[in-house]
Length: 222
Image (cartoon, rainbow, N blue to C red; front, side):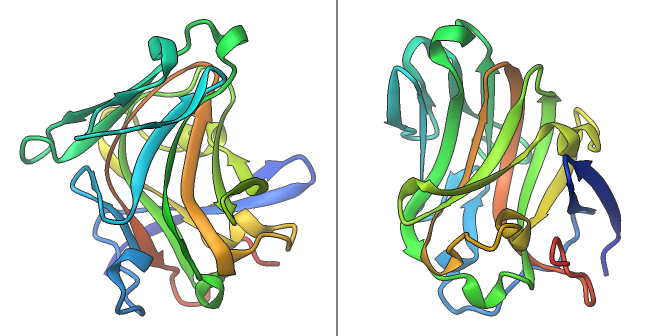
Protein backbone atom coordinates (compact mmCIF):
# COMPACT_ATOMS: atom_id res chain seq x y z
CA UNK A 1 0.00 0.00 0.00
CA UNK A 2 1.05 3.58 -0.39
CA UNK A 3 -0.15 6.92 0.85
CA UNK A 4 -0.66 9.98 -1.29
CA UNK A 5 -1.79 13.57 -1.05
CA UNK A 6 -3.93 15.06 -3.81
CA UNK A 7 -3.43 18.79 -4.32
CA UNK A 8 -4.89 21.34 -6.74
CA UNK A 9 -2.84 24.32 -7.85
CA UNK A 10 -4.32 27.12 -9.93
CA UNK A 11 -2.22 28.17 -12.92
CA UNK A 12 -3.72 31.08 -14.88
CA UNK A 13 -7.10 29.71 -16.02
CA UNK A 14 -6.39 26.02 -15.58
CA UNK A 15 -5.87 23.75 -12.58
CA UNK A 16 -2.74 21.63 -12.34
CA UNK A 17 -3.41 18.32 -10.61
CA UNK A 18 -0.49 16.43 -9.17
CA UNK A 19 0.35 13.81 -6.59
CA UNK A 20 2.93 13.82 -3.85
CA UNK A 21 3.48 10.14 -3.20
CA UNK A 22 5.33 8.27 -0.46
CA UNK A 23 8.39 6.35 -1.61
CA UNK A 24 6.75 2.91 -1.34
CA UNK A 25 4.84 3.50 -4.58
CA UNK A 26 3.47 0.96 -7.05
CA UNK A 27 5.53 0.65 -10.23
CA UNK A 28 3.67 0.63 -13.55
CA UNK A 29 4.60 -2.69 -15.14
CA UNK A 30 2.25 -3.22 -18.08
CA UNK A 31 5.04 -3.37 -20.69
CA UNK A 32 7.68 -6.06 -21.17
CA UNK A 33 10.13 -3.51 -22.58
CA UNK A 34 11.74 -2.09 -19.44
CA UNK A 35 12.96 1.05 -21.23
CA UNK A 36 9.34 2.09 -21.82
CA UNK A 37 8.70 2.60 -18.13
CA UNK A 38 12.12 2.94 -16.42
CA UNK A 39 14.51 5.74 -17.28
CA UNK A 40 17.01 6.42 -14.48
CA UNK A 41 17.91 3.82 -11.86
CA UNK A 42 20.28 4.46 -8.94
CA UNK A 43 21.60 7.61 -10.58
CA UNK A 44 22.28 6.03 -13.97
CA UNK A 45 20.20 6.43 -17.15
CA UNK A 46 19.06 3.05 -18.45
CA UNK A 47 20.00 2.36 -22.07
CA UNK A 48 19.07 3.80 -24.52
CA UNK A 49 18.23 6.84 -22.40
CA UNK A 50 20.89 9.54 -22.09
CA UNK A 51 21.24 12.85 -20.27
CA UNK A 52 22.41 16.06 -21.91
CA UNK A 53 22.72 19.62 -20.64
CA UNK A 54 22.61 22.89 -22.51
CA UNK A 55 22.02 26.61 -22.63
CA UNK A 56 22.14 29.41 -25.17
CA UNK A 57 25.86 28.92 -25.71
CA UNK A 58 25.63 25.22 -26.62
CA UNK A 59 22.85 22.63 -26.61
CA UNK A 60 23.12 18.88 -26.17
CA UNK A 61 26.33 18.66 -24.15
CA UNK A 62 26.58 14.99 -23.09
CA UNK A 63 26.58 13.79 -19.49
CA UNK A 64 29.27 11.10 -19.45
CA UNK A 65 29.99 8.78 -16.52
CA UNK A 66 27.51 10.79 -14.46
CA UNK A 67 29.36 14.07 -15.05
CA UNK A 68 28.61 17.04 -17.27
CA UNK A 69 28.28 20.79 -17.43
CA UNK A 70 26.96 23.51 -19.68
CA UNK A 71 29.17 26.05 -21.36
CA UNK A 72 30.45 28.44 -18.66
CA UNK A 73 29.28 26.02 -15.96
CA UNK A 74 25.84 27.46 -15.31
CA UNK A 75 24.57 23.91 -14.76
CA UNK A 76 26.70 21.03 -13.52
CA UNK A 77 25.95 17.33 -13.07
CA UNK A 78 27.88 15.12 -10.67
CA UNK A 79 27.39 11.78 -8.89
CA UNK A 80 26.62 11.51 -5.20
CA UNK A 81 25.79 8.89 -2.59
CA UNK A 82 22.54 7.81 -1.00
CA UNK A 83 23.02 4.14 -0.13
CA UNK A 84 26.14 3.45 -2.21
CA UNK A 85 28.73 5.44 -4.13
CA UNK A 86 27.41 7.09 -7.31
CA UNK A 87 23.79 5.98 -6.86
CA UNK A 88 22.36 9.49 -7.30
CA UNK A 89 22.96 12.54 -9.50
CA UNK A 90 23.19 16.13 -8.30
CA UNK A 91 22.03 18.85 -10.71
CA UNK A 92 23.20 22.29 -9.66
CA UNK A 93 22.07 25.46 -11.43
CA UNK A 94 24.32 28.32 -10.40
CA UNK A 95 22.28 31.19 -11.85
CA UNK A 96 25.33 32.98 -13.23
CA UNK A 97 25.20 35.25 -16.28
CA UNK A 98 21.50 34.55 -16.54
CA UNK A 99 20.81 37.34 -19.02
CA UNK A 100 23.27 35.93 -21.53
CA UNK A 101 22.82 32.23 -20.80
CA UNK A 102 19.02 32.29 -20.61
CA UNK A 103 17.66 29.01 -19.35
CA UNK A 104 20.05 26.15 -18.61
CA UNK A 105 18.43 22.74 -18.92
CA UNK A 106 18.99 19.04 -18.45
CA UNK A 107 17.22 16.67 -20.84
CA UNK A 108 16.63 12.92 -20.75
CA UNK A 109 16.00 11.33 -24.14
CA UNK A 110 17.35 8.59 -26.39
CA UNK A 111 14.55 6.88 -28.29
CA UNK A 112 10.97 7.32 -29.48
CA UNK A 113 8.28 5.48 -27.50
CA UNK A 114 4.50 5.21 -27.58
CA UNK A 115 2.77 5.91 -24.26
CA UNK A 116 -0.55 6.95 -25.77
CA UNK A 117 -2.36 3.90 -24.38
CA UNK A 118 -1.45 4.78 -20.77
CA UNK A 119 -1.58 8.57 -20.95
CA UNK A 120 -4.51 8.67 -18.49
CA UNK A 121 -3.31 5.78 -16.34
CA UNK A 122 0.30 6.56 -15.49
CA UNK A 123 2.49 9.31 -14.07
CA UNK A 124 6.14 10.28 -14.29
CA UNK A 125 7.80 9.63 -10.94
CA UNK A 126 10.97 11.51 -10.02
CA UNK A 127 12.53 10.35 -6.77
CA UNK A 128 14.52 13.34 -5.56
CA UNK A 129 15.96 15.39 -2.77
CA UNK A 130 15.70 19.18 -2.99
CA UNK A 131 18.85 20.91 -1.80
CA UNK A 132 17.80 24.35 -3.05
CA UNK A 133 14.45 25.41 -4.41
CA UNK A 134 14.49 27.57 -7.56
CA UNK A 135 15.18 31.29 -7.16
CA UNK A 136 13.61 32.05 -10.54
CA UNK A 137 11.10 30.46 -12.91
CA UNK A 138 11.75 26.73 -13.28
CA UNK A 139 9.99 24.38 -15.69
CA UNK A 140 9.67 20.71 -16.53
CA UNK A 141 8.72 19.71 -20.05
CA UNK A 142 8.08 16.65 -22.18
CA UNK A 143 8.78 16.63 -25.91
CA UNK A 144 7.68 14.54 -28.85
CA UNK A 145 9.13 13.95 -32.31
CA UNK A 146 12.56 15.27 -31.25
CA UNK A 147 11.30 18.84 -31.53
CA UNK A 148 10.77 21.81 -29.23
CA UNK A 149 7.80 22.59 -31.46
CA UNK A 150 6.22 19.45 -30.02
CA UNK A 151 6.58 20.35 -26.36
CA UNK A 152 4.39 21.00 -23.33
CA UNK A 153 5.71 22.16 -19.99
CA UNK A 154 4.51 23.08 -16.53
CA UNK A 155 6.04 25.32 -13.85
CA UNK A 156 8.12 23.50 -11.26
CA UNK A 157 8.04 26.25 -8.66
CA UNK A 158 4.58 25.52 -7.16
CA UNK A 159 5.29 21.79 -7.25
CA UNK A 160 8.64 21.99 -5.47
CA UNK A 161 7.18 24.43 -2.95
CA UNK A 162 4.91 21.59 -1.78
CA UNK A 163 7.86 19.29 -1.08
CA UNK A 164 10.33 19.33 1.82
CA UNK A 165 14.00 20.18 1.40
CA UNK A 166 16.92 17.99 2.41
CA UNK A 167 14.97 14.74 2.49
CA UNK A 168 14.07 12.13 -0.09
CA UNK A 169 10.61 12.39 -1.55
CA UNK A 170 8.82 11.84 -4.85
CA UNK A 171 7.45 14.25 -7.41
CA UNK A 172 4.77 12.41 -9.36
CA UNK A 173 3.30 14.07 -12.45
CA UNK A 174 0.36 12.45 -14.27
CA UNK A 175 1.26 12.12 -17.95
CA UNK A 176 -1.94 13.82 -19.08
CA UNK A 177 -0.88 16.98 -17.23
CA UNK A 178 1.53 17.48 -20.14
CA UNK A 179 -1.35 17.30 -22.60
CA UNK A 180 -4.00 19.63 -21.26
CA UNK A 181 -4.35 21.29 -24.67
CA UNK A 182 -4.90 17.92 -26.36
CA UNK A 183 -2.11 18.51 -28.88
CA UNK A 184 0.78 16.58 -27.34
CA UNK A 185 1.72 13.41 -29.23
CA UNK A 186 2.31 10.67 -26.66
CA UNK A 187 2.51 8.15 -29.51
CA UNK A 188 5.86 9.72 -30.44
CA UNK A 189 7.36 10.68 -27.08
CA UNK A 190 11.10 11.36 -27.32
CA UNK A 191 12.12 13.49 -24.31
CA UNK A 192 11.08 12.01 -20.97
CA UNK A 193 11.83 15.31 -19.27
CA UNK A 194 13.63 18.60 -19.74
CA UNK A 195 14.17 20.57 -16.53
CA UNK A 196 15.27 24.18 -16.82
CA UNK A 197 15.69 27.39 -14.89
CA UNK A 198 17.41 30.73 -15.28
CA UNK A 199 18.12 31.07 -11.57
CA UNK A 200 19.72 28.94 -8.89
CA UNK A 201 18.40 25.48 -8.03
CA UNK A 202 19.87 22.22 -6.77
CA UNK A 203 18.19 18.82 -7.09
CA UNK A 204 19.48 15.33 -6.34
CA UNK A 205 17.78 12.56 -8.34
CA UNK A 206 17.98 8.83 -7.73
CA UNK A 207 15.31 7.23 -9.91
CA UNK A 208 12.92 8.21 -12.70
CA UNK A 209 10.19 5.86 -13.88
CA UNK A 210 6.48 5.53 -14.50
CA UNK A 211 4.01 4.74 -11.72
CA UNK A 212 0.35 3.87 -11.99
CA UNK A 213 -2.24 6.38 -10.89
CA UNK A 214 -4.42 5.30 -7.95
CA UNK A 215 -7.73 3.75 -8.98
CA UNK A 216 -10.23 6.45 -9.87
CA UNK A 217 -7.64 9.21 -10.14
CA UNK A 218 -7.80 10.99 -13.50
CA UNK A 219 -4.74 13.20 -13.17
CA UNK A 220 -5.34 16.40 -15.09
CA UNK A 221 -8.10 14.96 -17.25
CA UNK A 222 -11.37 16.86 -16.85
